Length: 523
Image (tube, one colour):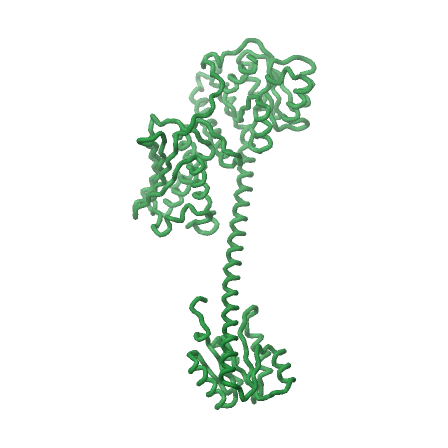
């Protein structure tokens, strides 16, 4: 209460003697107190308290109808719990019993009549100062409590986001196996000589499966909790993948997508998953903003090389209502959001700002009144990633290496069946095992030139299988590749990275399988 002082306080005087009441009123007015009411009828005190809501009560004890002791008890019931409304008792009763009873009934201070005018004014000032300090403390406690509640709500929301991320990752992983089957079977169908009459349908199935694969991988990119991994990135691809993830919602809300992507855009050294998350956040925010406009709704994504310096620029613009000037400086603050409760966490732009900063880039807003909002991202090209092994020519990397024996280890028979069909079509001899324990038994009975294994399996999983393989058949260590849909968990990623063997993510592409198999066989 920054404007409150003792002189602004409301004071209620209760005394059955008219002269005493008028004396107190005059003293208070002379001291500068302007909000004073008084009564000589104790029966009116409760109604006056409710109507006037005083900050201090000056109360006589011995009065007809209702005495001060009775009023003290009733006032304690009226004063809200936790509040401090002081009562100063002024009475001619000088007995110790009266003092004890008054303090027990709720009085805060006690003066006997006749009182000294200076002393009574000092007591009044002290009680009012205590009253206002108490109210200021109450307000501060309320602000702190609201902050705690808000932080708790934010933490709960973040926990929900984390849980949703894990759920999303789990759903995506569960989709990987059937998508691998659909994608592989469509590819085999297209390669079949009998498919000529149905080639158009097979192409549609393959195209739809590829789209599902990209969406699942985008889900996994959003849900992934991983340290930044810099690699060579095509910003145009990142932008297209992010929009594709939200394509259905944009289309159903009649949002037109306009592309202006530079064909000669230099590649950058960045974490593609983090940049994907930034673009998804910006596109989702633009979509939400345009819901408030009747139309036309247009989302424009532009890329270009940064002039005068080695870098790239991405802009994401919308035709929504724009962002008011008075809040533009706060949009990147953590937990700041203009969305209704439950529709936003206020973390998207803050996280995006941090990601772009980590990439030594900048992100800024352009939102002239009435012209929508445009976010501009500038990123440096950066140092190129460490060069990988020299790639073989395309035709060499896909050419089969003759009659070799390959073991496929996967607890999903349909996925294993697709791999068998793909590899047998290349001229390889293929056998299967449903788990690592079964695979070890088959390796004891006959030799294999390469092993493709899943990581998540019953009985003995891929990690246990690889460890046991290193112990029993160390010569096969360099002939193993993992084909998995479960590379999201940090411990699983650490294991795969530690092995140093090739890893393919389900749903896989046939050409990837061919290249990796050839690589294993050449070892």
